[in-house]
Each structure stands twice: as structure tokens, then as C-alpha cells.
Length: 169
Length: 169
DNA sequence: GGTTGTCCTGGAGTCGACTCCAGGAGATAC
DNA sequence: GTATCTCCTGGAGTCGACTCCAGGACAACC
Image 1 (cartoon, chains in turn brown, cyan, red, yellow):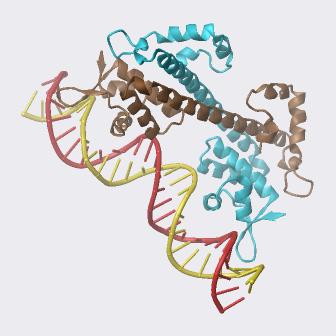
Image 2 (spheres, helix red, strand yellow):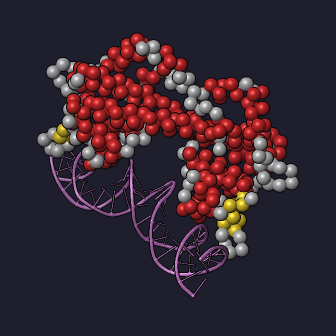
């Protein structure tokens, strides 16, 4: 079973141009051509391309993915290098996830800020009276809110957010 | 207490150029100038800039952040719009986190693939004998591995990964 | 009064990852 | 036999978010 570039694009949810761009960039050296010069993709090629797309989703640059593909072409002697490369990107990815979770907890704080302000009809409930400055220890009030609604414990259970308050900027 | 652009850059961990770029882009209309035209930042400005940086971390574009700041300038009538805007970005952010977690589980599968291949000294243990094609139901073997090492249950507990196998491409 | 340091502006350049385009070639449909 | 479709190439253009640069101003120290 083989596929044309259009069918592959459809299957993988990317554009034809993107596939050609990846090919130009050296990510698809394994793809064969037919008599009239058109690309012919096998099921195995699709497997590999899914790995490429996965690495891309993990935030790996096209240049780094190219390195990975080169290693693959060199055969079994590079197995360990490829493993290490994936491990490195796993570390990056974990960092990205943690960062986004931190951002999420800040966003939730801000949502609480606007919810309470909307309820009060004015943002000034969060300001130092007579000024336009936000109360400095609004954190503590938010903590009380989290405790009251039983969300604090849940938040603290987040394995990789040791102290959400430290991370909330 | 006020700060110069250099001090703010230091405090927020961004470059001076980035701050000026944000100012040009309309993200910092609240920042005042002194007699000789230099920017003067207050503690309150820093608060706001942290929110801006948080939104940026959440993947919000500069254009969208600009909208948020504009709404803020319009006062209390826009409180609800600002809340909705944050909610929308929370949804995006949750999607991003879920996607990264899926990518992570695929990456872990690939690591297992290379670990076992390295242990065997050759990648061919994952190929259909006599070919260069990956065994199609390698998934199941990986499942067995996860079960044996007690990781499957843990993986399934991931709230937002309903079926990690569906998502692993 | 010269050097150094931090700031200012407008505008050009960069980078990654596409995305689009012109011009052309086989295959298929009517 | 011509219109339509899908494919090909090289190369130019785009987009967002910076990043850098030239040329200049003020302040502070020596």
C-alpha cells in the first residue's frame, strides 16, 4: 500500500507544502519517487512522519529533527544517541508543561480577580483605597478563597508545582 | 519607588529592547515619562507587566494582549469582557497542556522503543522479520511493558488523557 | 571638557516555519 | 483535443516577535 503526497497530507493533517518543506529540509530522505518523479509514501514512511510530527509538537526544531533522521540512517550504532536525544527533549517538554501549569494557576488567580470585581461592579475593591494600585497582599485573600472552596489542597497536590505562590509572579 | 527601563528589564528577566517593543506595540500606555523623556515605571506598572508576560507565556499574541490593555483603560464597564478574554485563553492553555501531555506519552513510548533496541543491540527487534518495517502492533507489547512495571494505572489516572492509546499517533 | 553609562527614536534586519507562486508535466474525464 | 486534476521545482513572500543599529541627549565622574 502506497500513498501520494496529497493522501499523506490528508492522513496526517498537514498541508502538501509542509511535507515538501520537510523534504527540502532533509527530514524525509527515505521517501521514494516513481518513474515520473512523484513522491511515493509507504505505511512505514507514515510511521516515521508521525514521529517527526510528534517531535515538532514537542517543540523540537526542524534542524534537530533532521539530526535525529540522520542518526537513524546510520543504523544501530546510533541507537543510544537517538535515545539520549529523546531524553533531552523529554526534559524540555516536561519544563514546558510545568511552565504552562504555572501560567494556568496565575490565569486562574486573575479570573478570580475579575470575577470578584465584576460581582462588586468595580475593580477598585482590589485597590488600595484612594489609589489605582492593586493591594499588595491580594495573594492571601485569594488563598482564603481557595481554602474556602476546597481548591487549595487540590492545587498543592500538583506534583510539579511545589509552591504555586512562589511561581505565581 | 520608581524604576528605569534597565531596572525593570533586570527584574522581569526580559531585555530592554523587548520592553520598548511592547511599548511601541501599545502594551504599555500607562508608563509615564520624566522631564527628559525617559520612561519611569512604578510598582503598579510592574504588576501589570507581569500579567502581560504571563499572558505572553500562555501563548497570547501581542495583538490580543493589546486588546486586553485597551479594555483595562476603559474602566469598570469592561470587567466582564476582560474576564471572558481570560477564560478563552484558559481554554486554549488547557488544550496546549493536554497536547503536550499526549506528546509526552508518545515520547515515552519512543524511549522504550530505543531502550529495548539498545539493550538488544539492534533496532531490528522491532521490525517485521526480514524487512525494515516496524511491527504494527508494537503498541500491545508496550502495554505489556507498562503493565509489568505498574505504569499503566498511573498513566490512565491522567485526568485529561482519556485513552492514551488513541492519542498516541 | 572628555569619558562613560544609560537612556531615547525610527527603522532595518533576523529567524523559524511555513506559505504561496510561476511555469511546467503526466494522467484522466468528457 | 482540451479541460481538470494532482503533482513537480526553485525561489520569493509572510508573519510574529523580537533584535540590532545609527545617531543623538543628558548626567555623573574625573
